[in-house]
Length: 376
Image (tube, rainbow, N blue to C red):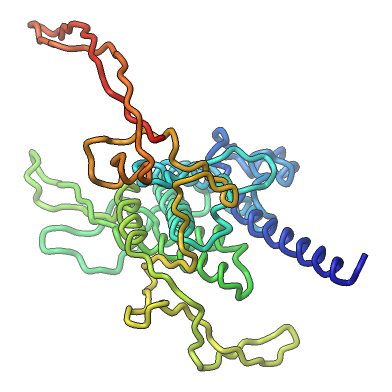
């Protein structure tokens, strides 16, 4: 074998190894497709089989150690993974890319090969999954289902005129810190893709904390509300998803910039070395630099119209569309100009419902004809 062939083979092996390492860090997403994991990670049985438990197989060693030190978090992480998948599907249900997931038992990411790209869709995936872990863990702390955290009682803001701090605030600080340790653990080095992932992970978490709201309960004789006790609660995850979807639509395309200043870091030998700080700069110099809550990307997205083997996306052929809409869910845009077919089908529905005293609702069964439009 020639030297050129050896070089090409080595390059392919390095690329495959890099993708495997990258996918290893996202395997925890597959917890969204598992049953309810065991919460008792301090039991002798759990400790004895901690590194062979099917529940924990998608995790890296550092992730396993983290959930072992914080019993109950594996349940919250699995719930967060399901929340992220459901929210992603909801937010993109009418788009060409509709956030498909794949059952993959070979170490691949459940969102498919698109995570190898640095496009907008990838930025949303990382932001929503990181946000979901922070949200779910913060809520579980307040519920008392995680052994190493409780409600957040450290509210330093002053009391109001007719209310005071009390109750059980969702522990978003613990949720953010846990998410950072759990989700960011594999994003190492100074690779551009890793930097993008870290930025979008943090953006997702910041929106969870930013949208916390004050909730109150009245106290007093006969509900007079003489005084109110208030606490901070998480926003609904739908609200977080809505905000991240807006950030997706306004995401910044970036290049790797050089700040020009030096960053001193200690090495293992106790010495010093200088590294220039790297930062994300907008491709368009007329646009402002993205802040820490913006989503960023560097690859243009595919059009998602046709079957794309590179990212494992089947295209929009066969997708149901709205013939009366001029939006992205309309047949013109969703079908990419290929046209659509319409077919009628019948359904049986309850109709002509009336209330009869007391207390019964009676309905008729009506047969209706509906039209289904699908992309060619």
